[in-house]
Image (cartoon, rainbow, N blue to C red; front, side):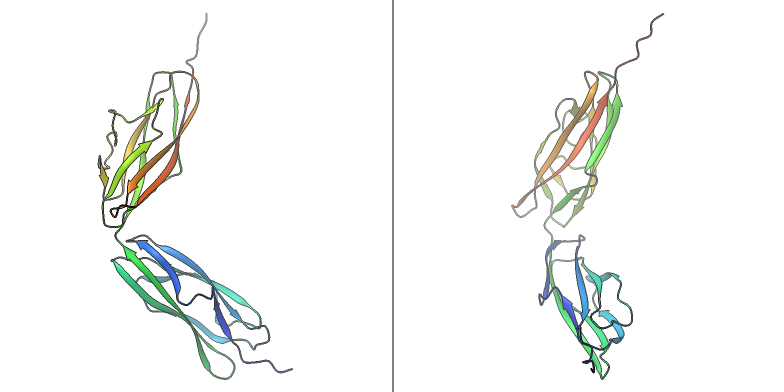
Length: 231
């Protein structure tokens, strides 16, 4: 039996696709699926069109045609550089076997200058140290937004871990009470005896609008015994 003209649809079906609120210079990705109807002709001359500076097509496995009942995937990234609401649309252009067609999904997202912090790593290993000897490492923070991230508390930096000099940032380049850019702080490890040690370090901050967030990472180290030589 004759096939119907190609008919392409984009899922998820939300229109517009909402990327939510994203801090400046950070990003959010949404994965989409482009599908052709199960009883349809092959869509040809297929192309994806996105005319925007804050929305970008980061990946796609869609080719120039899409067969009967077939699908392909693509990902769009929202990365605001200024505060405000941004709208755009992704357009799938194709020939349905009869005429040229377009399937459109509108996009919306909000850029905010609220501070956003991430630890660069989820785990920091300070290595091995003899009892009452120290090793030190940098813990890195990524910063996004525009407002200062005001530090509310830092927990988990307990014996045998400490801030060199006794206080945050321990000789690192983060601000002592607020963070306005990617930075690092230092932690030392001074075991009193042999053994494995780990702590969960949690930094709680205010995003500049009174909203609190907490981020965590693990620090670990190993105390090793000195070799005892006998003659």
